[in-house]
Length: 459
Ligand code: UDP
Image 1 (cartoon, protein in one colour):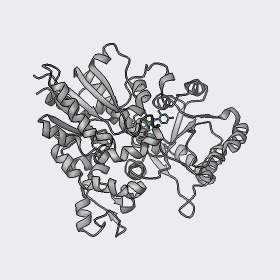
Image 2 (cartoon, helix red, strand yellow):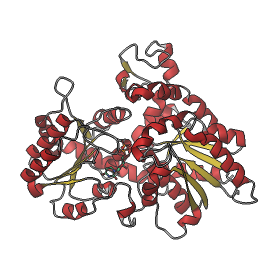
Image 3 (cartoon, protein in one colour):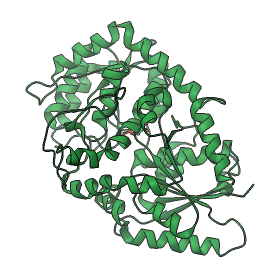
Image 4 (cartoon, protein in one colour):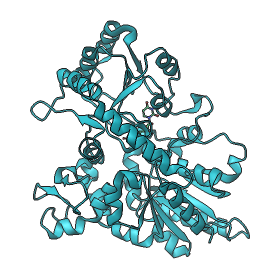
């Protein structure tokens, strides 16, 4: 048995860093991997520190190594543009830096890097693994369906559904296998990436290569959620859901978005299964009218709600006065925070449902707690996730827009009532909760997959 040293390379976005860090902790604390180097973008220092477990000896097992993404001292927001460059060639010569790091570490007699585990969005790490003759594994932080749909791009081009630049030339439903859910061409993700469309498409197009080069392809999902999709791509291995194991985190003062822990006390005062939790993850935005309709809709429900209003969630900032008037009207029935300890919130018995943007992490977090969902998706993988939630797993409802544009306050009120007055959605969510929790327990499907991966790391 060898002594593995895993170099972990996340993609620089909150929703990609946290599951890969969680996987690293899982490998170190539960599966005996004693050496992990976690290479993270320096803008995310506080997030990484916050999410890291406080167990004794963790620093010996997981070495945190920061690298710049974007110009010196660039903010998290500035970095969002640079991170797309990283998909391609790695900004600031990242591949070269990774190669140097491996050469430097592996010049020593012990603790040589034996494996690169990288987010599947990054194209270059598997090439480095091959070049250096070490093991390589990719990790998908999104649903398996999204991964498999991208693998089908050559087929879509052959069928005349998209052109060589990724433009959709034929609007239609796509059925990738008899048992996989159908997806509409409008769900294909790269057109929603604006100026990065071409880059993103080109990468998606060449993803086959990365998958071929990798020895393992891990996915933060479960067989129970996506069996038909996993059946079409046996190399893709479900090991999720990766949930924060670190519920006794140190106080949140170091978190780059300070968590409002007082909301947990507020939740303690609410009746069981009464609260609508509203959150749009880290990057989804609302325009002024959407924001106001959402506020009015929550007011109309006459139910308690906990609403995460990130400082940057509204694309125009004319809403402060509006928000104050709204707060005065709803009084103690509603609580607004700028960032919540979401995983703890979702475990609270007072939560009735989640109204959200359909991010994959939030989906897994809610379903792992048996909570039904209201879907307000916008772009990228959110559309796939919404389809799963509403049409495949039947654990939630989506909002309809008026004239394809605005979700109105009445629609919000009506969908909340429809969701909470039916037993079906809650029952289905509880059923999935059991399956997801069993999957990561000792002997479960995801657990066994992770064990096999660990055995392979030790070869
Ligand atoms: N989150 C949080 N507090 C909040 C809102 C979100 O901790 O107030 C976390 C949430 O638990 C999840 C992540 O932010 O792990 C959002 O990831 P997701 O994939 O759902 O959405 P993204 O931000 O990637 O669009």
